[in-house]
Length: 132
Image (cartoon, helix red, strand yellow):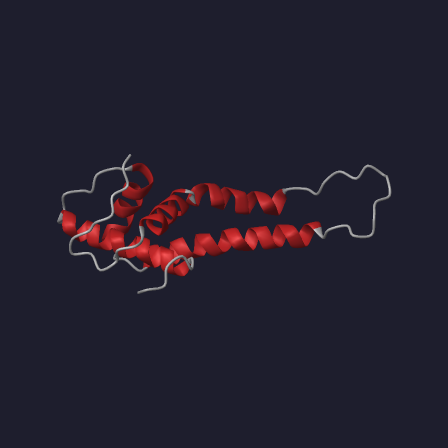
């Protein structure tokens, strides 16, 4: 599947690397949600009964930090998706994740404009690009 960024009539043009990084972060959405849920239920490493040094890392703190990073990305995607009109959210989401074509009840340029806005909004919320 080819990832194409609109060049004409697009005020949300991103650098190529930022655009692709944002697209793949959005595509990673469901895996990130599963990982965030799995962090809550995963158990700590099994203790072997042997004494270790005093600089034992705080496992709970590391899990909390890792989960917070994931939740930040998920929240950025959810918030950016809620900023586009409701009737375009599902088609744009399916187009980015699965490459499905847009439905015909609105013009293709309308979808393209909202898709570009969504991707740029996600990039901005993730701190990848701040020129908007």
